Length: 254
Image 1 (tube, rainbow, N blue to C red):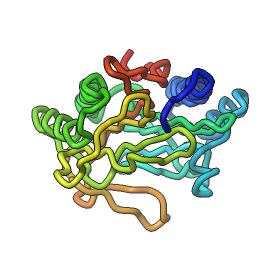
Image 2: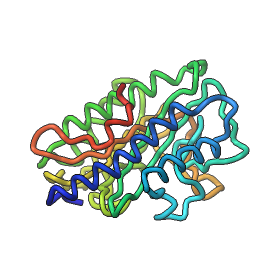
Image 3: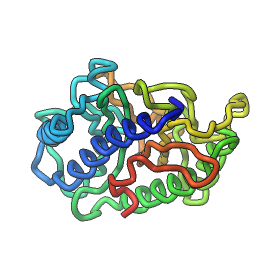
Image 4: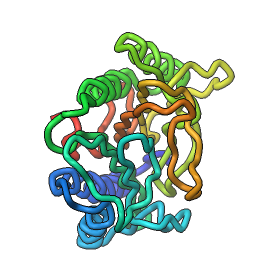
């Protein structure tokens, strides 16, 4: 969407507060021995307290309130009573929701407890790349140039990007134009970021794979060549200068 009046910015800020606070609290609540369904239920209650509704459930009938992916699962993981979290797990939580007609989206990968499996370097790279990408976005910048920046930075760290997972426009629905904000330079994408537009910028930084595929459950995605992936995501408003990071309170960069 494009912000055309103050009421729209206020609406986006409220929806973004709901998803950002939910993500932050879910990250703090997660602990070894808990199931991913317990973690999802906890997040669902926080969203409900804000009066917000799960975006993946509303939009796709997703079997959960948030996407929770563990270890070799890259994204869209289904919360489960049988998936028990363990010390050192690489966890990705993606929270998106609708509130009063406005939609916002954010996500974070993190290590549960002690980093016994050495995932922190991947996570830190993803966070830093997202920060650099977002602060290079302003009206008139080519979407493909931000993709190029993300992939170039990933290579500096010794990682790859997932080429078939992208960021996207957001605001009046979960996915809007621009529909593909890729993590690499897509030379066929001539789109430029527009001032006052709302977009969800995501990193998909991988150790081994360049593509993700859907597993047999019909939702969860993993790398075609295995490995691990870190994802971090903020919803922002594009300006002529520094962007407005609507979901900054999720604490991903703290």
